[in-house]
Image (cartoon, rainbow, N blue to C red; front, side, top):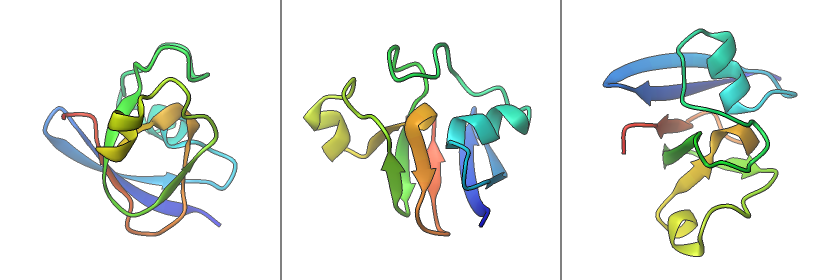
Length: 92
């Protein structure tokens, strides 16, 4: 089941539809909002964003420090929404 996700990038707010088999990053790329990314495999942390609300599941969070995770940072290339109220920002 597809899930709506709000993405904040460069001060703009976008509503994305994230399919079950997609990551948030893949949905953002498909929507042509030009999110920051480089590798798509959790190696570079370029796609790091902050989770403002909702819940996600990350396939791999190894590149993030415990402190970053506690502060709400996620890797969008590894993140799948679990709830309908997911809001992330690349601006923090």
